[in-house]
Length: 151
Image (cartoon, rainbow, N blue to C red):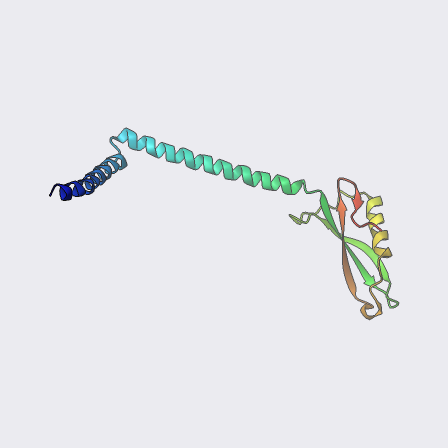
């Protein structure tokens, strides 16, 4: 009999211990006073404010990083002549690839004419496309002030 009682004791102790733990958790979950409840609300609101501030900083960082993107897309527009060459090459737009913001004032006239020369040196579109408007894109690096893949 003693052996069976000893075997039951750890199980009974576990039940008592788990009941005590449950009772302690229930007491801890209930605020003991109004001051404790107010402090809990204050802590939660401070956490919410901190979270909003972090999100605002991340958003501002993303916008400022987009403004500092060093590459600009230059879109050239031209008409294909009957012999398959490019005619009336002009710059349709200069924009930032991330935000599509118009940045036509960043390039000097010399850089714009250099881009037009580069487009005119490319392989001609072909006789089949005669009379059609075509667009080509060149990427301009603002740090080095050169077109990428300049020919």
